[in-house]
Length: 82
Image (cartoon, rainbow, N blue to C red; front, side):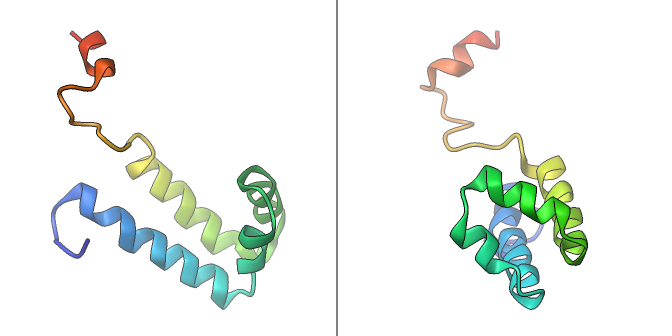
């Protein structure tokens, strides 16, 4: 996860940084006590979550398309790309 210049290694530290931001703002219980969809709505409503929301948007722009096995050539989804 800490290797520089490798896109797939950036995700973990970025998520950790966002979690730290939520803890710092006292908003971590929103994620722990709600479904992902409900937590996202609640966080978007809170002014104190502005920094986290910006980090999340940046993360999704950079990593939102990534998934497990994305480069696995045996994955049937890749056969449709040709």
